[in-house]
Amino acid sequence: MRKQEPRSGPSVAVPCVNDMDESGGEGIRDRISSPGESTLGDLAQILLDNPWMNQALQVALGARERASQAGASAIRNLNLPTSNDLDRIARRLRAVSERLETVEDTLDQLTRELAELRRERDSSQPGTSSSG
Image 1 (cartoon, rainbow, N blue to C red):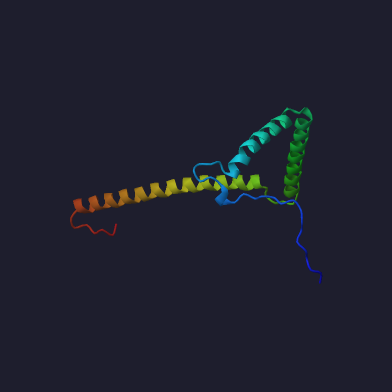
Image 2 (tube, rainbow, N blue to C red):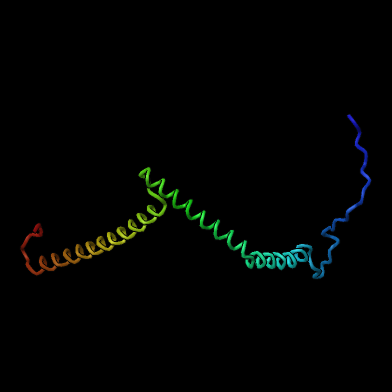
């Protein structure tokens, strides 16, 4: 095995946490992120203003939509539900469930009222059995 020799080249000073001013000095992240965000915003604006980029985005989005439609068509041809079909079924089931709960609540209320009417009837007719 060959022994590695120390490299001699330009040394780079890496700031240490202790080297930074603790009395409110700007951290390295803050110094890098502010101009970086501004530059990124400028670049995004330039790209949006470019007609070729706009056209490329429109073509890409159109291709995505066509691919999505082709996938949904293939799934339907296999007699499988699409995600939209499943979402629609889920909404329908929730609606039916809510209606069923309403019916159950109404039935419970009617049962209580019927029991109350029977108690009133039985209490107003002494000597009548409650077997109805």
